[in-house]
Length: 300
Image 1 (cartoon, rainbow, N blue to C red):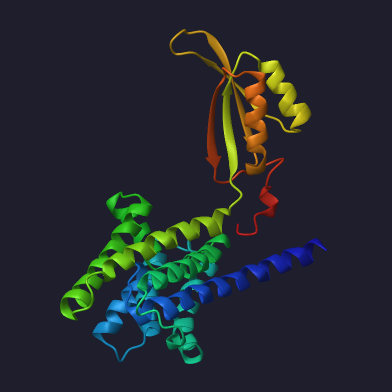
Image 2: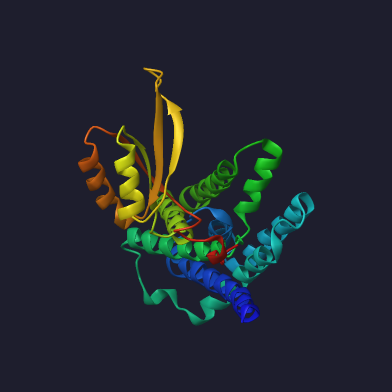
């Protein structure tokens, strides 16, 4: 039974990659390419190159850039990408070539409402990339460029990706706006799409159910402990500390609760000690007893 479950998870992860690449490709085909929006990345660059060389489909430009980047990545970093990243990087250009043959972008004319094109395109691209990332892979492209910047220029990975995406947007301005006389507002739509893609990727990877982290400082530690263990049926951690002003010893209670529990917790804490000091923060992911376990993480 365990072997069957493991086998299903293995195969399902590859199906998720195909689904993610398909959704991302449809986002470009339906909402980006028809309106010449360039939301950064390799596939934003294909819009610019296709405008310069319209006889060559965007999918071929994808292969022209993705394959050299993969080879450079393997030469520099070794087999760090894994088979899933290679698969995602190779299947996406194929989808970009095949899907336009069966999907007609003209059925949805948003030429008079580019904001909708930017929003829905960003949602689809972000959701597609997020699905791929959840499997532990990437779609290649500017991710590899970011890794190269990190290795040789000492920049943060995110900074390297931002530089690559910014370069694509600047190329879009130079070719589409300056050289071909497109609307100067196109770069603004591109920036909107980039922001939406980033937010949707975060949601696709982390989900909506972010837990809440509480740091509680109060002299009524026993009542708080009884509430957490007895009523809330959770546990916490006591952190030994000292006050900066008084120098006196204090105990900080570290507690993680679900989003639906936070209102109840704050209400009860106020009843226990209205003068306590509490810090509440978002936890983007909580792994361990009482929450999501590592065994449930199919994307790893």
